[in-house]
Amino acid sequence: LMPSLKLRNSEVEFSYLDSGEPQSTIYTTIVVVHGHSFHSGIFQRILPLAAPRGVRIIAVNRRDYPGSTLFSPAELDQLNNGEETGHASFLQARGVEMALFVTALIETLNLPKPSDDHTNGGIALMGWSLGNILPILIMSSIALLPVEMKTRLQLYVRRTILYDAPHLPFGFQVPTRLYLPFSDNTIPEADLGQVFGSWVSSYFAHKDLASRDADNLVDKLPDPSKKSTVSGMTEQELSSVVDFTPAQRSENAFMTTMQPALFRQTCKALFDRSTDTAWPNLKVWVLYGDCSPWPILFAAWEIEKMDMLRNKKRTMEHRVLNGANHFVSLSIPKI
Image 1: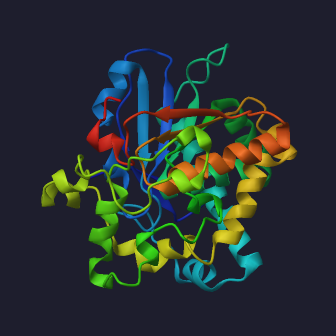
Image 2: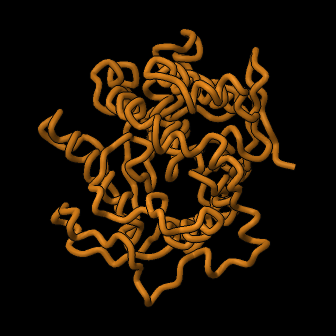
């Protein structure tokens, strides 16, 4: 069974995978949050690589996924049917909830603080795919936290890594001419999970990425010289990383009705001066594979553009993983 942590003064608990404590006394802990359908098992191949590199990885299962608490009927109603105020309250509650989880990890596992020069130790919050929602919500919700918890997180959290994030966690609008499986009405509902899994784990030969031009992004037809990651997985391997049950229950609302609320939270987290002040030691990385599906590259460019519009320069660090697709943690874990 996966370990789990129950939140203080709450019935909510989160299950997680833990790579274990490295031999060094001070090390960085990466708390990583999975995406749509593919849960924390997606990181199982990189966990054994963490400790030998002096890093600890904790991969948490979001709510509605195996071992973590299901959303209540009231929460689901707020998510799926709520108005603007309800959506904002729902998202703020998820940010506070995840902040509580990270604080519980610090206390329960006795995680090391950052070093004096802030080059080691402490915590990096990392989202992957749709899971980038939660690092964003922790950043935007810090003012809602009790003073003691707020102070602890400000001390410990030194980096947010937006890893292979599509437009959806940020509520960005995208060109409607570009292909998305979830918008393809020709795909039978029973086949959508399989089609999505193949598309999202394929390799795409995009052109002239330096141009930042969406017309150079390949949207539908993957690179025929490379197989999708899921096509090389056995049925047993696939079942250990995927759960399509939350899709209709809760996940799809994040991709539809919640988009305006997510955009507002993104602006507050990444582009609001009060958030900068609240997180004085936090640095933001934008990390993505150059062979990932087009929404990931489009989103990275949008963040870069908004950052430069606000600051007249790029304040976030962008790193490109050459040759990597969206499932690099499975296909090339040592990258």
